[in-house]
Length: 102
Image 1 (cartoon, helix red, strand yellow):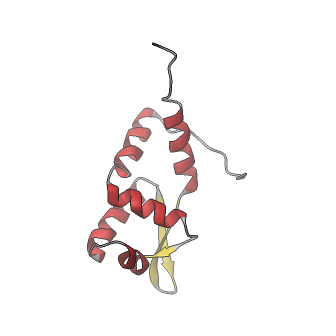
Image 2: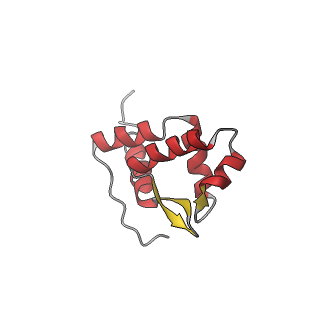
């Protein structure tokens, strides 16, 4: 169990997060990052059939939404998932479940 405290996003934040991961390539990137502690952009280009510039653009969108964090490691761009955002997203989506009607 994680020691992180999950904070559910507001409706506006939920919509922005959903939009950020609402592209199949960005879902693939999130899955690849979830399987690692950190990932160099070059590693992603080896696993996705896209140009590095296209992957970088998808990473920019995910970073702006707070889904990933970026920095440098050994002088190369490196990205990790921001688990608290994803935990909040999962909680908010589960809250959209069965309202008890019909």
